[in-house]
Image (cartoon, rainbow, N blue to C red; front, side, top):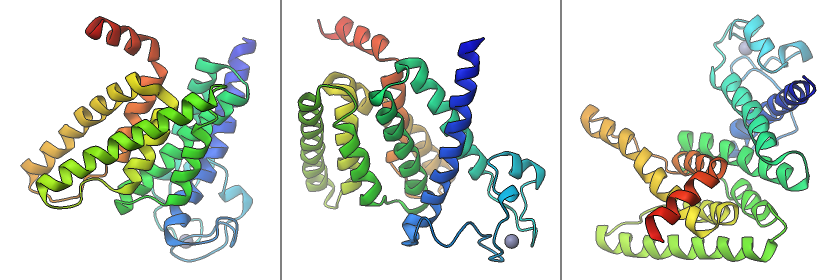
Length: 249
Ligand SMILES: [Zn+2]
């Protein structure tokens, strides 16, 4: 019972942080200040009252519409809030509460933010990407190992990029993907990162096929797939390490 209350509190804190992530997702790519002006409707510019700004609850009470001009509010806002709440609880279940679990939570929260921005713009801001990378060096007490693993993954990704770009005669992967791979390396280590890359590529096949069939030429962002794969492999690390040893030892 006591644990359930702790999880509920962590879920609510996560939702509030998710609300802030929405601000980052919306404002950073546009080069806007993240603190000023205060929350307003993007359509009619009306300043939101505090009770219009309660995560999830306001969305439900306002039936997903602006209180002033009735413009539809994207369902993505409450989805990002709920996902961040779930993320906070899962990190807590996996690691408990300490400085390292807090850092790890913020890395994954940044991954979620970067994924959403990559969806919209097919590019991610270096500011948030480098912040995630820097935090990732400190996701466990083995800072030197984390740093080394980040460098190896970034080097490996750069190498793949050179080869692929050479053969397809155009730039493969963005620099953003390489920085992101560094954070993944620091979080997962080499073995799990390789599995994560494999899973990310595997998941990305399905939308690519859909792309082909529907003949809709939308450019596919890669960071959302890397982010999902990194989280799955991180959360089930025991299972994947076990799988690795069965395959290679
Ligand atoms: Zn409005």
